[in-house]
Amino acid sequence: MGNKYLISIDQSTQGTKALLFSEKGELCVRTDLAHRQIVNEQGWVSHDGEEIYQNTMQVIRNALKLAKVSPEDVAGIGISNQRETAIMWDRETGQPLDHAVVWQCARAAKICERKEIQEMAEQVRLRTGLKLSPYFTAAKICWLLENAAGAGEKAKRHEVCHGTIDSYLVYRMTKGEVYATDYSNASRTQLFNIFALKWDEEICRAFGIDVDNLPEVRDSNSCFGYTDCEGLFARPVPIHAVMGDSHAALFGQNCRSDGKTKVTYGTGSSIMMNIGDTPILSRNGLVTSLAWGLNGRPEYVLEGNLNYTGAVISWLKDDVKLIGSAVETEALANEANQDDGLYLVPAFTGLGAPYWDSSARAAIIGMDRTTGKAELTRAALESIAYQITDIVRAMEKDSQKRIETLRVDGGPTKNRYLMQFQSDIAGSEVAISTIEELSGTGAAFMAGMAMGLWGEEIFDTINWKQVTPQMEEAVRERKFAGYKNAVGLVRTGE
Image (spheres, rainbow, N blue to C red):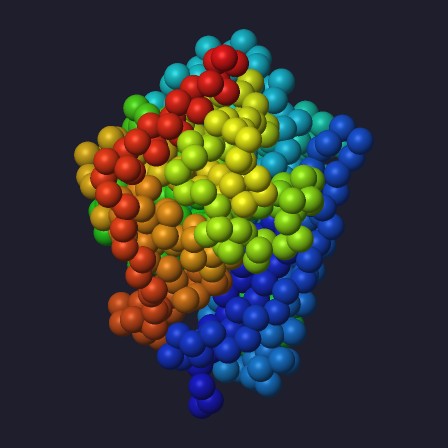
């Protein structure tokens, strides 16, 4: 018997990755394939489900070929996936009935404005932990049922399946034998009662969705069936972990106990705190979801999402053309006047958590004659840390817990100025992961633990670089108060 390997599929917004891990939990190879971003003249964002499935099969083949590993040596598969994106397919053939509606797409906004749904807005929040919004899967499924050709009639005959991308991949990979999702993905649909741990029939009816057409909800480390990956494996292998990507990153960061918090820095950011086995409904502008379900035990998270973190640097480079590359920002920020009262509030399309103010717009506040390229760059970098700290403080209020350490990942964590300022302004230690692929790693770690390939010692394979706060508390509070004042100005238009 050869070495045992585990494949993790990370199906994200831009593409699909296959990560091949050794029996020691070491990442051997990574292969990716991008899929089309289908954007029409109305700005609707779609994905081709068939393209995503075929790419998933291909990246698995490519990873094994690149690593020169025999399919016989693969023990199992884990899956992490883009969240909230809705897809609908034919129950018999497995073929998509229309393109998937991507999480970024707001085409279902008018559905959320319907009287019968608006009247349930508070109940939706109280039962699902989510603020009523077309961002989540519920309204997107409703849109597909009403607009995909023949979907409504098929749904009445229970001839359709609909859900998030994980449930579609599992269905296709198991040749229709398993129609299931996990707790983390179900909790992001706005259809799942996170207290009763079941699909909420009243909310489903409001969105015109038949509960019988939704997938079974399983523990995240369950066996989700067996797959031969279109004949690649002579002996079908188990799919033994499924999680939404942010949840998988939380697991990969080893934030498996109450109070542990992670930040993923990307185009936007996901800030997520494990709050244990008792859900807390936020009073401070956050949402509550299920982290995962493990061996019959669900755990919960508080979460805040930001649209403009890494995207602020892209704005500096691509739109304002103030810099040539993101690499320049660290040196420029260090050159800048460090205490000039300059703030950038990046509300380019409104403010998300914890404000939810779609009418707010971006502003640079506090400029004087000495403000230059370096100062503007510094303010842009600091705006990332201020936004994250705003959510961290909301989490501390909701949870009544002090966040001593922020575990962080993503490309912007390479910027030493940003990481030091993040630690300073949050007043927390920042632990930077040496692993970039934390969503895929989290799914792999969970699958391997479920299959007995490794135990909790697998988390010792992650190394951390520690950054500690250097800023005096009085300075921190003055700077943060200045940021909050700037946010107040863009919210009120003063």
